[in-house]
Length: 133
Image (cartoon, rainbow, N blue to C red; front, side, top):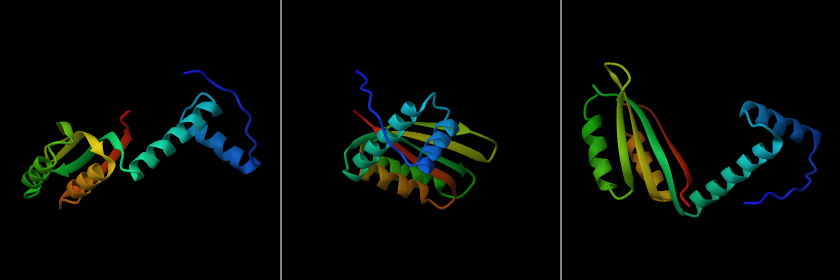
């Protein structure tokens, strides 16, 4: 993909915010930061348009809590067509980390993650999506 140069005019405060964003995210320059912002905006629009996206659902939970595993498995079986794989890690004797790789319509992945993260006993959960094309 070829690169096209163009100029951008920004207010001083907005430029300071851009520079702060570039520094906080360890980008090498403003162009890289702007590319990241634009790409993220495109991906978020795809979520809203219900396009096919790929991502991960990350959950941390206490495996001793009653019914977490059975409820999670039941939900996952209902969405078997969008789950590519799953990984289960033991962070401690009580705490587990589970990561599901997913691909499908954005609304379906959001629905799946909401159901999983909403299980009583899930300490933390997050869905991360990116474009699949």
